[in-house]
Image (cartoon, rainbow, N blue to C red; front, side, top):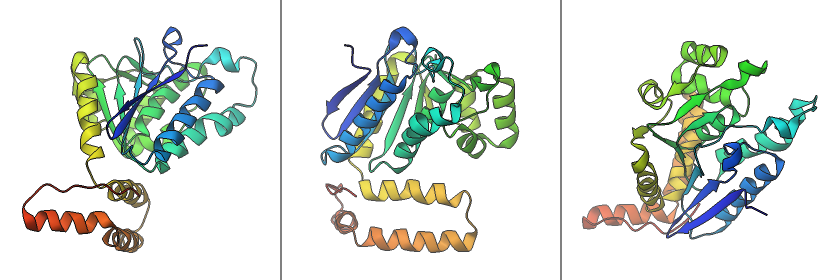
Length: 258
């Protein structure tokens, strides 16, 4: 039986490859479970300090495999049992995440990419909020991420017109971090993961939390949140190492985890 998520182990980080290329890496329940398990294993491995999510074949992911839910009338249950736990898992993962997107990233596949901390895209990438094409609404966190990334006007048009967004458009709008030629994507994703893996993991994860919280918080609430997060960061061994490295004029050697 073909593994639906391939795990590549590298020093300090892992690449998780969605592996249903004949279905453009569309998800069924088994693939959702396989990705959840791979994320759990990566987090539990104390030597893993970053995760790259990529797709095999011609695409990143076409999202939900519609054949797998043919005849299902309760799509809310499909979300709550499959997609929502994955998006929550990425939001709370104990290491930084990178999405390396090529080809199509459609529907929940696009939402999955946007749930990662840093999104890199090949020139061939197309982000498609395809929900309206089949009479559905954006899900898997798409309705939360899109307006925060590109603003409400663009989010409405992207979601309601269901036109593909090119990699260059996505970058210019602030939907993703960077665009590169297709043959450079894997190398750039590896270099980004290596940089993240060499960084202060606990502080990077706390930074994700602070930025997510700040999107909906009042200034006073966010100042208090920053205080609490900074208090924890200041008590972490990475802070002592960072200060010592700065004073000694050397590169820091962060080895602790959250």
